[in-house]
Image 1 (cartoon, rainbow, N blue to C red):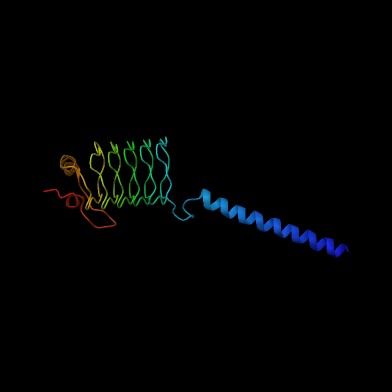
Image 2: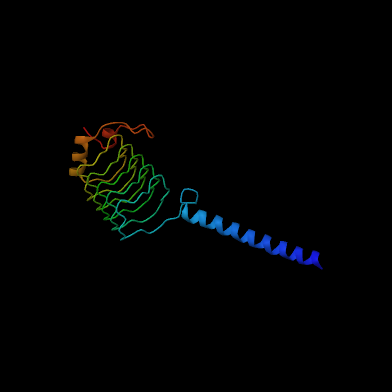
Length: 173
């Protein structure tokens, strides 16, 4: 009888231990976006001033109308991300992959795009005043002609990933 009680207690303990392990794994996946698979998240209309998104996979996430002033997106995977009308003043996109991103009507004043990849991004009606674009790849980015001209005045460097010269990707002549 004592042996049976001991076996039941062991079974209960094992079940509790397994449940706790599953919960810990689930919590780790939810709160550690680097280990978790990429899920598109809607951050639209949120105040995210000076948030650190560096190194994260934010593929297809939405930041429409969000206040992201001073936020860090360095080395982040931002493919297909929407930043429509977002305030990205002084944001850091150094080394970020913004392939196919929507930057329409975004405020990118003094943003850092050093070595960023913006291939195929949409950026008409976007403010790049004071932006740093050294080594950025603007291949096939939709820009207004006046914005393209301003960016050509400061364009320099070669993107270390794509090997493309920034001035060439902006069609500067």
